[in-house]
Image (cartoon, rainbow, N blue to C red; front, side, top):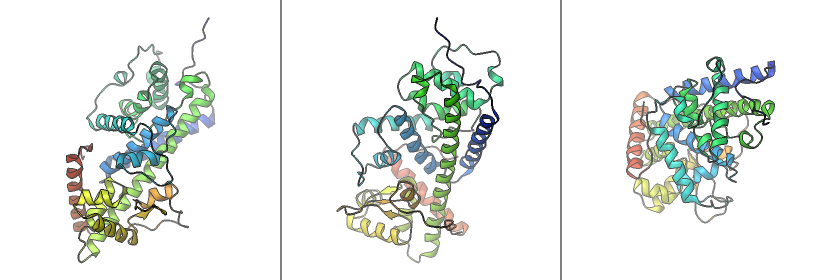
Amino acid sequence: MLQSLPDLSAPDWTPVLAGLLEAAALAIGRLDARASATPVRLPWIERASWTGFAAARRGQGAEIDEIDIFALAGGIALPRRPPLSFAADELAGLSSWQTALARPDGRHWRELVPVTLDLPTDWRDRPALLRALELTAIHARADRSAAPWLSGPSLLKALGVTRTPLPCLVAADKALRFAPRDRQAIVPRYLKALTKAADDGLERLDAVEGDRMRGAATLAAALRPGKMVSLAALLQRRPLLTPLGVSRALRLTISGAGKLLARAAQHGLVVEISGRQAWRAYLAPDLAVKFGFAAQLAGRPPRPPEPDTRALSRFDEEMAEIDIMLASLGVVVHPRD
């Protein structure tokens, strides 16, 4: 007789496990509150989707890192990184998921788990985070694709954990399929993964907001900012840039775009990561540190400058124009709140 699988929403509670649940809920709550109110929600959502998609692909056994998805989204080959196999399929999957996330989603959580469910009578009384885990496990055993992992952010929203889907909250665990009885290991690992994803997402949000402040301060300080402000606005949506990409986006010559990026590097807006390659590539400073292209500076990072309201307004107008330009090229644009 087959023994039923353990219900991950009803673990054997210990003080440690209760602490992990509380830590995950608090971390997600902090991120949700900030992400719902930030003026850089659109660029953050896009970067968070790259992070979440990379996690989902690793959950499928793909040998891929987060930086590879960033490069894929920007259409850039990076130094010291292997070329992505089946890049077109990966990009199509990412674009499809981003499009789904951008649509207003009022679906009930049952619609996100397309299998027959036999739930216990006290289901509603169990922690929402663990109900999400149990539903993901059921979905993952029925569907061997990446869909169960990618539905995680929408499932958390449908269960009332977050106000909107936060794409970085993807916790893909192959054990849900291959070792589903190991509840004592799966539940804490899941809670730790969500906590880290939320903390990393908040750190990334801080960095994007800092980039916005620095871009606006550049506009306020420069007598003739020229295309530098346009580049800073483009960096919000495309944190990995090359002279070729900048020349196309800002309608410059490749030589002019290269000089503009070199100036931006001098101002600390980007970090060159090309190494000894003949071509040049530049990355947002926080990501250069995150992905090992630059060293973390000692001490606390400097606080972004405080530009005046007029400079921020003008910079945000520049960002809106960048959004329109990217949308015309077929890039998914999430609605601004």
